[in-house]
Amino acid sequence: MLSLNEKGLQNPQEWQDKGYTLPAFDRARMIARTTEAPAWVHFGAGNIFRAFQCAGMQKLLNEGKAETGIIAVEGFDYEIVEKGYRPNDNYTLLVTLKADGKVEKTVIGSIAESCILDSGNAAEFDHLKAIFSAPSLQLASFTITEKGYAVRDAQGNIAPAIAQDLAAGPQAPNSYLGKVASLLYARYQAGQLPIALVSMDNCSHNGEKLFQAIHTFAEGWKDAGFLAYVSDPAKVSFPWTMIDKITPRPDASVEAMLRADGLQGLDPVVTSKHTYIAPFVNAEESEYLVIEDAFPNGRPALEAAGFLFTDRETVNKVERMKVTTCLNPLHTALAVYGCLLGYTRISDEMKDADLVRLIQTIGYQEGLPVVTDPGVISPKEFIDTVVGVRLPNPFMPDTPQRIACDTSQKVPIRFGETIKSYLADPSRDIDSLKAIPLAIAGWLRYLLGVDDEGQPFEISPDPLLPRLQEALSGVELGNPASAEGKLDALLADATLFATDLTKTPLADKIKADFKAMLAGPGAVRKALQSL
Image 1 (spheres, rainbow, N blue to C red):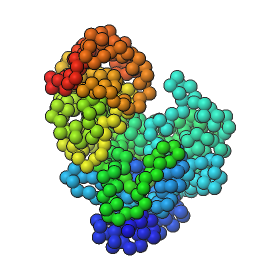
Image 2: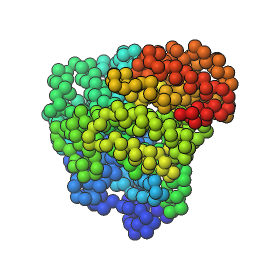
Image 3: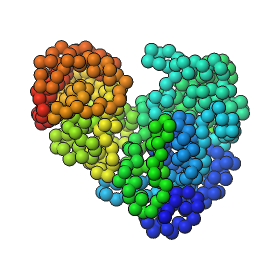
Image 4: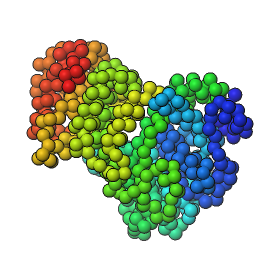
């Protein structure tokens, strides 16, 4: 039997005989060196961190290009550390699911220690303050989701929890970002030591979002020296990044494969905050991480792990290329139509000729003519990999239901930006767009919560769902006339679509497609076939 911890790895041959790749460095020495001179702290101990950043750091350690590892910090759900990381001695298992059917199983040992971001736990918080006071610390990175950077509510007002922390000062804040700002304050007090705070979350201008959040605390705590420190990029930088790697929730088929290898400790743990913990993460092989090279205290040689370092403008172009053209619009179109057509795997959708034609039209015909070309990555090659390798991968257990979450927040970027590019260019004919309006109509049809066979399904969480469903109340499958006048207010909403669609020819196309999909069972399929 195999156990994922120091004791269980004392017989490496047993693991290697079953196809596992093990760390090729002296882990005890790495942990000792990290304790003496920490260089990298990461906030957000989730799947993408374990599958991407940790795997990249392990490559450096294996090749002798680094001597220290990563200190993992969890600030939302402490049980991830208590029940997931520490029982496994901070080891994790990466299962890479390749499109050709091959599986790579890698034991990741690049995490030197795991910490809890709890200002109410003196031992944990003081330890983190000591780490942040170390002159050797080069970067603190983040994968805490876009919501994690919010310090204001939808009306632009400071959130109550943030306001309490601003009033109380930096000693014992309660909010996530307040605690991060408090650790940075400790670094400031230790001699205004330089550091890079690097958001690696999948959101636009992520470095700017992190800067604005930390700057809010620096202003609110009314310490002019700390404010100057945070505002000086030679002391504290906030590099922008673009990250792309699919790491779905651990899949039962992968778990069964590991059990067949004799791996113990695979019983899932669900925390009191409903976080699903597994000792392994399954992920696709494709990955991109483009980082603005702004590190005032130096950085690990992560280019040796395939990370791309460039300037801020190029990072912004890569991110725009991905989210407005080459991946995210295709994902969203597959998500809403997948739910309507009863699919539960993205890879299965890629066997559907109608859906493949839809996303190819969105990407190649309608998106590429106005794509932002960043230079460091070819947009055409990126889409080729998405359509030909990544989305069809039958071993990736990703679902349209997961991707359909929060679609209202995604539509203005994923479709609206391309529409705006057509509107801004007199040489472009916006009336030529057919697949993008069909994708938008499909999303509106999805909001009815009735599939193409007339059966109800559960709509994925979305912050605007009550408002959207109220606007569509009374619309019925089998009664296209019930949609009359229902879409105009929505299509005129520039916050939903990045522009007032009623001032473009697309509104009539969307309304016609939507009504066509209300004709009865099978109408969604017919609309797709008409493309």
